[in-house]
Amino acid sequence: MTIAEFIFAVNAFVLCYFLALNGTYLVLYLISFVEIVDYSRREIFSGLSELFTSAYCPARVAHRARVQRGGHHRRQRAVLPGPPLPPAPGGGR
Image (cartoon, rainbow, N blue to C red; front, side, top):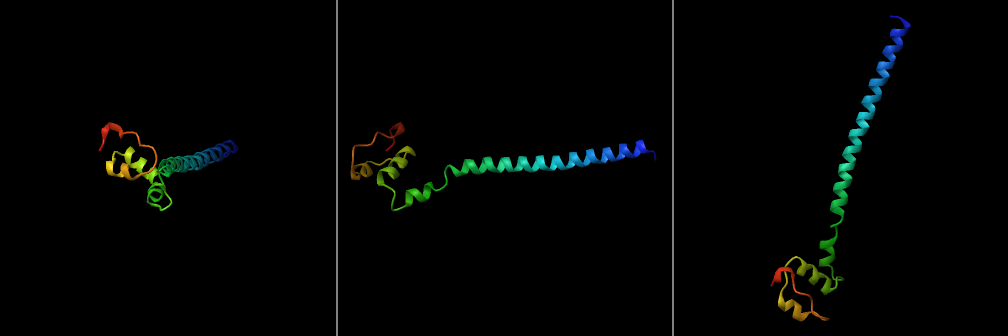
């Protein structure tokens, strides 16, 4: 083996090592990116169920959430204080 062949072999080994290592980092980066996007999408809605079942949640806030989901009931509207709520989308009852 000549010096030129040895240098070529070392260069090929370094190139393969570089590609393997950076390819691994790229795969890990893509996995983390997908997980962060999924976490961010779910984090928007985290805690809403606890908020609406909390004793500190104002009745109008919980009621407006029900109205927006289409669960509007006239008897609930009559019990709540304050100005009347707008009608539910689609005329829900």
